[in-house]
Image (cartoon, rainbow, N blue to C red; front, side):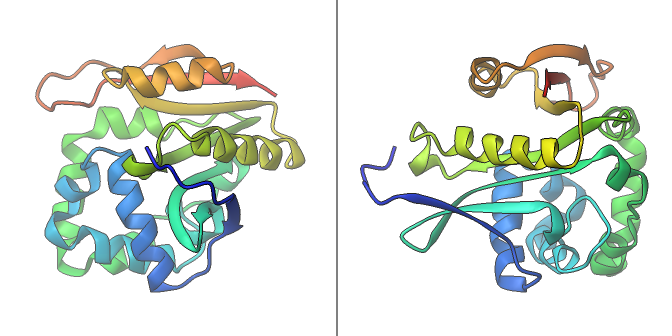
Length: 205
C-alpha cells in the first residue's frame, strides 16, 4: 500500500497509444492474464492500438484513469447496455493482425464465458474492468472509481450497475459487497480452463 498523501484525481482517457498502453497494463491486472492468453506476447500493443478507436468495449471512450502526482494508479471502464448493443470487434481484429486467428480460436474455446460476459440486459450499466496498482490498494481508489462509474450510469439513465468477478477473487468480491453489490448469477462451470468461473454482481441505482 502506498504511503503518499498526495490527492487522487480522476480523468477521462485520450485516444493515444500512451494511454492505451497504461490501460492495457491495468486491464491485464484486472483480467488476470486473460488477454495475454488470448493474444500472446503482443497483447499490450494490440489492446493499446484498439483502445485508440471508438465503438467497442476496450475503447478509450469508456475508460477513466485515477492519477496520483501525475502517475496513473488505477482505471475503470464501463458502458450502458445501449452502447454495448452497437459494439463491434473490428478494431481489436484489425489491431491483432495475423493474431486474429489466435483471437478467433481462443474466443471459440472460451465461448461459454464470453457469452456470459456479453449479456448486458437493458437498463444495466456494465463495469468492464476495474484495476488499481498493487502498491496503491487499500487507499480507497477502487471505491472512488466505482463511484465515478455510478455517477456516469445514473446520468445515462441506467437502473442498475453490473459487473463480473472471478469466483475465486474473494478480496474483490468483498470490496463490491461493501459497496452494496450482491451476487446475481454465476457463469457456467467449465473445467478445461482455470479462472473462468465468474459471478455476476449487481446494484440498483
